[in-house]
Amino acid sequence: MRVDFERNPKDFEIALLGSLGQSTKFIQRNVGMTPCQIAYRLAAAGIKRYDFRNGEGMFHSIRGMVERTPSFKRDVYDDYCKQHGEGRKKE
Image 1 (cartoon, rainbow, N blue to C red):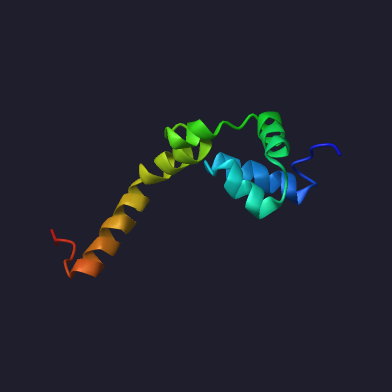
Image 2: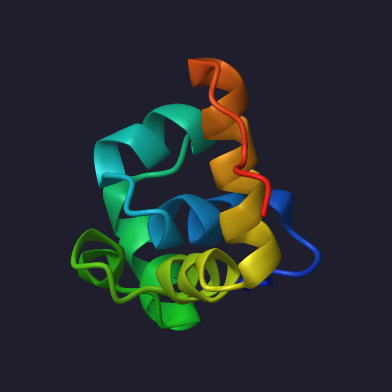
């Protein structure tokens, strides 16, 4: 069977879990493929789990862009203030 990440949900799930840094054993339990099949699909997708673990993966770069936006920082600050009973200081 050919590897197809767009049409085969199991292939897509392997790629997703691998890009999130999950172990082969975890992926094997959830998808039901052998470790060799999992490794082959991750290699075909160009996914290296150590990128996620080292903070260099695609999800870390997206999260970094989101966290640097002013609206995200303001929302996080507002949520913190609501939880701790502090308000934004009026100018």
